[in-house]
Amino acid sequence: LYIKIEIIRDYKVICGDELEISEYFYHFRKLWKDMEKRIKENQFSGVKEKVSLRRRANEKAKILRKT
Image (cartoon, rainbow, N blue to C red; front, side, top):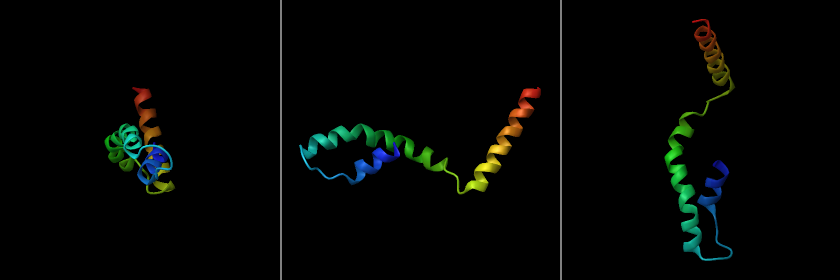
């Protein structure tokens, strides 16, 4: 979806009707609008953050398996 939205935002019509192409991309723009906030909120600021959150998730999983 990341690649698709970059193409959709920056496309230039080479062949075909601009309105038809825009209507074709409407579905993808709508999908991106719905998902954009969740996708951006779930990005990590760096590797350290990702590793620490992964460790924490693994520790929680171990605790839950014991119960």
